[in-house]
Image (cartoon, rainbow, N blue to C red; front, side, top):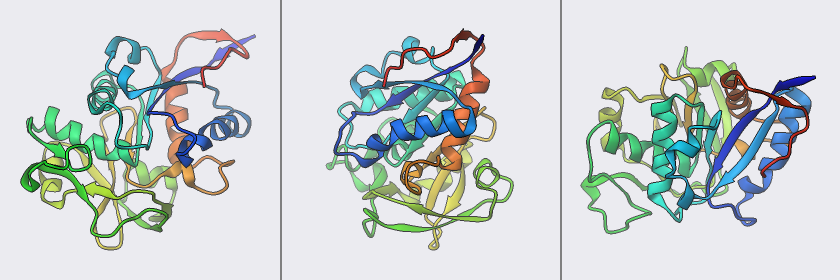
Length: 248
């Protein structure tokens, strides 16, 4: 008997020191065992993520935390490939930050837009991603979700408590411009700072400043991760034998 197994690219510079990276294998096991969502996962270093043809063969792309990435260009290429090729996508923490950067450059036409962590000498007026007023490393907070958004649909509630591990976020001066070009901000903290972005006309394109992989004890996938997995399985049409080798 054969069944569909989705191939997912885990884009990031894998490290045992990044807690979210260490949680991925258990999350994939839980998706398979609890939800029947079978993913064959492959880590793609950011230096290798510029190969659009290779990434386009995957059923989902997840750009994980761990900034600054070894290759900003590779992370941006992975996001652009997912966006343009309509491949299910999730970006978490630095993935969220680089979604803002990619969108600013490639959709809004701001070729000089910068990320203050990647390039500290970026002029303040050109930085789409800037230091947070207060570090969110090790913090958790409540997110208010936009009614009718994919984020709210997946969570099944108007708000959610999420965990962070970041020092950088969206420059508020650019939010309206990004929004005017089609990027929807569908989650914010108590102060109104954006924390979730999505593309409603994409099969699945979601990015969060918080890290859903840190939810709970790591054995019950966050609804956003489960949503990505379901979208990946829906994306694949090629049956393969059961129990294939895994790339993680």
